[in-house]
Image (cartoon, rainbow, N blue to C red; front, top):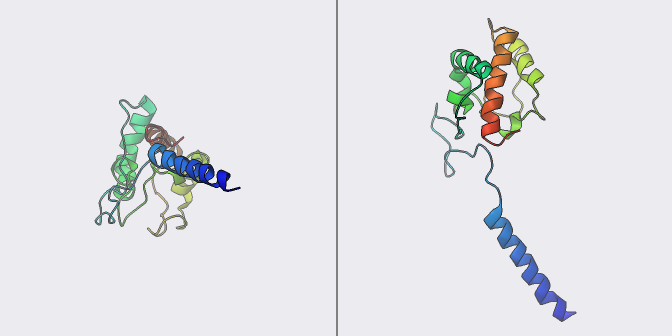
Length: 146
């Protein structure tokens, strides 16, 4: 039995070492690992696509005028104001496009983050929100969120 223990421990150590070396970096890693961002700072780092589709370009303009005040530039979140939308929580399998449409139309009670409730977005059409979704989804894909 003792001749099996040493190889088993060695295999476990090798597996742990390989995991630590080759583990993937999380998408949208927090900007400041040692401390929280300052009030108003971006919450995550967002890689930008080389180019946006025409629909996403319209969505970016709408996002910048309606959403960025709380969700930050390029949907990176804004400390003290709103969460990043380029985040695994908002991947399509967890928050589908309809969730974004409903959030703009009905508002959202705080449930994933501590930013408080999201108010209804007055004057934003479903077409505006669909373009915003196109923009956010393109940002998400570039950041490994599918």
